[in-house]
Length: 296
Image (cartoon, rainbow, N blue to C red):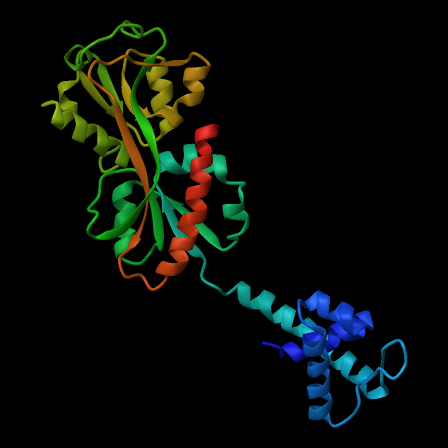
């Protein structure tokens, strides 16, 4: 780290004026003068000639200016090299959040100001495991988890809805869960957050996934939506995942009786993490951007 007196000397040399140099450095003029005097005392010679109206560097001052300009350039180059060795912030995100929520704020300041950010996309169980083993610093998750094991902060609460094809026999009818059992159920793979939320709700209703006519497990939301749109199958997804398909008439939200489920997304990290202060500052930025999704 270069001495602040060096920045002061270079500013005086640039502006040839103590007042302008002080303003550029957000300092007082007496402080600038003091810095110059301390440099002169250190090198044992006059560096700045202020005997006339304008300020000029002495011969010694010109030599020092050339030397310090080179040092300043080297310092900046070193900082650039150093930044490439800094460990990036390792954030995980579940598939729903990454593809249909993070993607909408990817160009916001949160990502522009955190260039050293690495995002991994996996299911909720894997993300929590990687937090345990210190393979991730933080994660945005949407499944169920033990709040006692992690610091957890809410990001956004989103509707979780049943979805069918627009031409489904029950597309415009208010039906019961039992009536829905006669159709295939398309859902994510085991241990995904989306599936866990559905299984938890079904258990509350004294039902389970096996109650449906058939179960189709897929790891791709694109494939899930394609199959549902071209069959009589039903699926349960976050509203944001199928927002476009509902808007263009390809899919339809099913009016299922006694179903009104909203679920929060959380920003989580290990309790006692030494980077807690940094992670909380990152959460604050991330949370502000998630709030903007309400207006999209």
